Length: 440
Image (cartoon, rainbow, N blue to C red):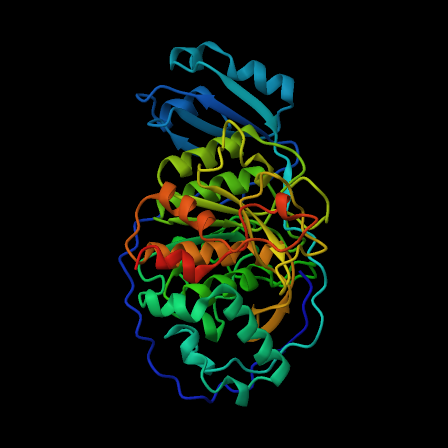
């Protein structure tokens, strides 16, 4: 994502206490202090018996690091540093592991995933958001009077975006507005000090897999993707302003990450009680380890939302492209999201395919940006979090069945108007009002 923004200048607005009740957060799993690296590392996916312990696995694989461990689901995923593919495979087939009941395994390179190459956002940022500091406390209805603060064109753009999603009606139907629902954002981190995000970020459950510490703060170091995670977070919270965001910094400043980081982060997201995981990232290749941990998350009722990619070509990036496969049927809970413009026609940049789940608006979306700023963001990276936010909104209405959520999300989508691509844009475009009306 490339954006231009200006610092908020209305910080003197009255700061009313946010009337948000946070639910108790589950304890996050213990985390190694060292960041996980890619390079010559290999990832091993082991099929294990339920009686196997972490200690036994580590004793049988000296030097390995456990990325994800779920004996109930029958797998362990390890990072094997400093070993080539052949050596690692030989070591893992030794007598110690066989004695533990390891039946099958795959050893693969720790390949990299990246945030999509988002098109440049046009126009200047804006210097205040309607409602200022407490804008999201009551959802978009609290943005009343915004035309007096926002430039007219930006206010019209924001209203058009909310209207396209049916947000005013949706937030009236679900006044909980995401309360009690945790959404994990696996991205470049989040600006933890952003005024508009205060009270909405659970940094204690998050982790920084880039620097290997407990502060998943978005950091500027010359990377082209600076601000990406903060912008994704802002989209989710426009839809479900009372949701809690679990920030998991996996992408470096260049917007890329080894699979090992993403595997660890999904494992932590599930353990921390996230019910939705947003992945505005992807890769050209496939990964058995990542497929395994995603399937494990889905089996525990967690929905995973992935952007389709920004190459403008047929065929989505991985893991989105696996939707509709034997591993991830259309109803599995892995969702592939593409982008449409204001007229519900395919965005020029979006990847597409017959197995896409649905689309959402993804062009010049007003959202948060580091440094108490707001900016316009364009790309499938910002279509996917609209779906994540809609799921959080519906979940706060008391819906507990992931399969029902996926079915209803697709069934209530607006039909595409694009005569050329409509058969390759999924079930339609996200309609939040119709979606939550199913439950209220």
